[in-house]
Length: 311
Image (cartoon, rainbow, N blue to C red; front, side, top):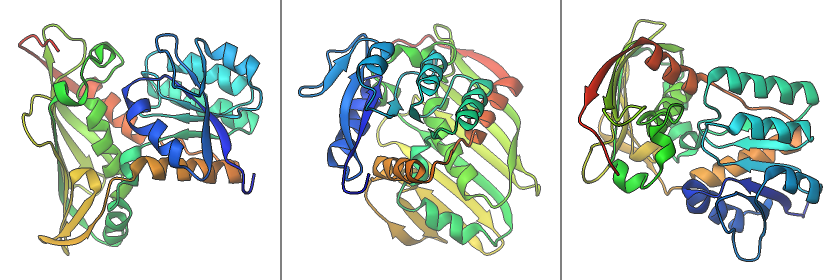
C-alpha cells in the first residue's frame, strides 16, 4: 500500500483510545482512522461508528487492521472474532486478561498467517532503546522500579480497573515491567510480592514485588496509586560499569547521574510504526513476559487489606 494510508478501526473508544490512538492516527503517514466500534460511545465526528464488532466486520471488509482498546476483560472473544474474519490485530496493553488468552490469540494468528501485535507502549519511550543497548554487555548487580501516580488523575471513573482482570495498580505497573523486560540482558522472575487491596476493590491499589534475575541480581518493584503530585516513573539498574536510570517513564536516560538522552513523548507513534512494519512483513509480536510477571505477582502475593477506595 505504498503511498496510501491503510484504513484502521478502533474497537473500544475509551480514555486511552481518545487520548492516544485517535490523535496519533490523525497524524500518521501509514494509517487513517476509518471506523470506531463501541456500544457505549457516540463515535467521532466524520468517522463511521458501529455499536458492535460483527456489524463493522460485515459492513467494512476493506478495513483489514483493527486496534483493540477495550478493557482486557472480555477482549479475547472480540479479538478472536476479528482473527477468524481474517483481520490483522493490534492489542492495547494489557493484551488480555490472562496469559493463556494471549497465547491462544497468538496461536490463532500464527495458524492463519495473520499479524497480531501485543503493544507495550512504554517500550517506545524515547530513551528505552538506548538503555537496552548500553546494558547489553554489562553485568547486572541490582535494579529498582518505582512507579507511583495518582489514580484519580490518571484513571478517573475507570471502574473496570478495580474489577478482577483489570490489574489495578499493575495497569500502569505493567508499563514498568515492559521496560524492564526490554532492557535487561538476562531474564528475571518474581520471587515474592505483597499486594494491597482496598476493602471495596477486587484489584490492588499498591504492590511491592521482589524479583530476581537469573544471574542472581535482586530487583525491587514498588507500585502505588495513592501518590499525590508529580508521578514517579523510574527504572534504576546497577551494573559493574555504573548506574543507569530511566526516568519519566523512559523519556530520560542518565548514567551515573549524567543525562545521556532526553526526548518528547512519542510512544504511540512508535507503536503504530511497529504495527505498520509488521503489516509489511507479515510477522507477529506477542511478548507476554510483562503479563506473566503480573500473573506471578498475584500467584505469589501476600494479600493486605487496606481502607476502602472510591473514585
